[in-house]
Image (cartoon, rainbow, N blue to C red; front, top):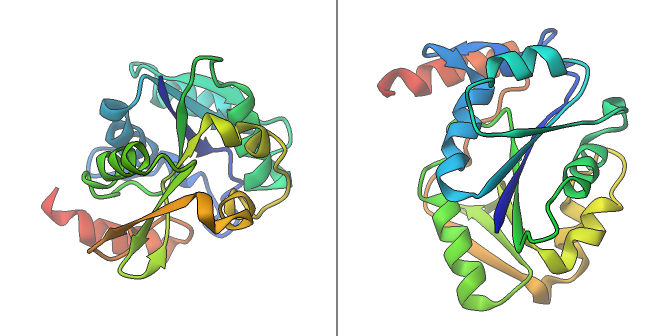
Length: 195
């Protein structure tokens, strides 16, 4: 089974309001992120925080499960740990996906899945024209490391711990934008004009 852990518990301090619920071309930012991953996974866990009820409402018709981070202020690592703890025992690999990165190119997730299968490595990570990014695919062999994460560094420590177990997937597009500030959202609206 392939799963996704979608990170949606951030406090959106730089945005000043819940960025994941902002309307992007007729639907919330978070829906773009999840709808992009659902065709590729068997299980999707959305990790929420203080906006749990509003996010559940926005996603009520999608086939997702929810896990609540009781301490989202502890950072992205704590949300990944909550999501990893919610994985089904039969999960072979899990994608860690940013809820605020709605326009990830559709070719990225299939490329990560194929690269991990072909290489047999525990981690497959995209490199957007030389810049490491997300989503990142983790095999079950590293789930314990994900469950042990804390703080705001996300899964970077797990990826960087041993380069020999990481398969880098080169993607010849710019890094997909995420939404952290009002300016980011305004730019994203411009990028999304062709959607």
